[in-house]
Image (cartoon, rainbow, N blue to C red; front, side, top):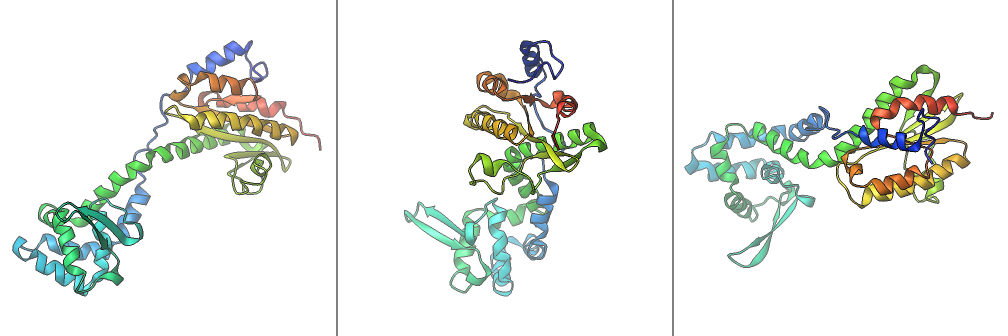
Amino acid sequence: MVKFEELGFSSFEEYKQRFFDTLLPSDKTYEYFVDWNKVKSAVNEYVDELSLLNSLTKIDATERVTHFRYLLIKYPQIVEVIPLLIAERAKKGRIDIFDPEIESFLSFEFKRSKVSEKTIPQIINFCIKTGIMDLFQEVKDVHDYLLGVEVGLDTNARKNRSGDIFEKMCQQKVGKLIGIKYKIVNNDPHFSLYPVVTRGRSKGKKHDIVVYKDNRPILIGEFNFYNTTGSKPISIAESYIEMARVAKEHNVEFLWVTDGPAWHKMEQPLLHSMKEIDWILNYRMLELIRRILNLQTVKP
């Protein structure tokens, strides 16, 4: 059971109440919305190709197809940008489309090595039917347009980014709380109990944080934030019970910092873990890590 007395609470109920009362409703920080480095890198990778395509915005509509054909012949590399203009990540440079007019699938290749006199008409037809040719009439700068497309695509990564943000939040807060008395290693590649817990199946998995004292690991920490309910937080809660047991066998404290509005609707799985794990905190309770470390006694 969570050692509530060592954490400064008079009862488990008081600890539990504090935990659920102080859960964060969201972990959206400034970094949550857009990964600008990723977006800019994706666009700048094709800066030359975009400059060439940008010339199509300056051409009269009646001459645009002819000029596009000329660009494909002279600069076949521009074909690789075409799927991005419709927010499509073409797997292996290929897009398969069902054409209702012929009731069959058509395959379009967007690799420079596939551009030829035979495939150029197919590429142009694709651009006409998907509205890309009309796009050159509407936008003034293809580079700026693609920047907007990449921002939109990046929103799909927010779910994964949410977990990374919470991990970083906790790592930074622990660093401020502990100070120089202990050595803190984030995602330490040199110490992990996962190979023990998983019987060697997760050799590369790292703990979100490892705290050392006198060059000896004394605490490992895992940080998870859940906005929505589901099977994942429940399975994680169960797996950490075993992690806590193995950590204790290795004379290491295991700390689980978890947060998020999902726990309000999934109290029972979390309460089960609280009955089995010594240390479970949320973000706002993280300052109590000092009590945990002060209690830790590692025999030389």
